[in-house]
Length: 177
Image: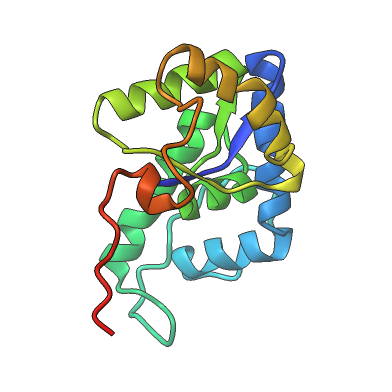
């Protein structure tokens, strides 16, 4: 059951914009530049954290304190560059996406459909929702997505009993005390 932050919008574009704002809030500018600097092996404090990744290659020098081997840093830099290029991401958004799963962003219908698909394809058995104030918290999810999941028959409308164990269909524990 992977953790997921849901970002809803009335349109897909609105949800993407909110997700971008969430990335900017999650990763402060200085943190983004330090994280990128560790991979590049250089002081990148002069770069704009909301600008593109630097065009220069990572320093292939030897590992040092807190510095991974050069081949590992080069592979990571290549992955981060591909991530940035695919999404048109800034330094800060690249660091956010490379270090945490992206939010599940879209209209309520999009999000319900994606969650349903992930469960049906066996990618997940369910989700642990991680609310973020900038993403709208859980109220929007409960009011706008849960009914759609219930219509699809993938979210319960009633509970089996008073405990998580009973909801999951597990037997009560036998106490040996």
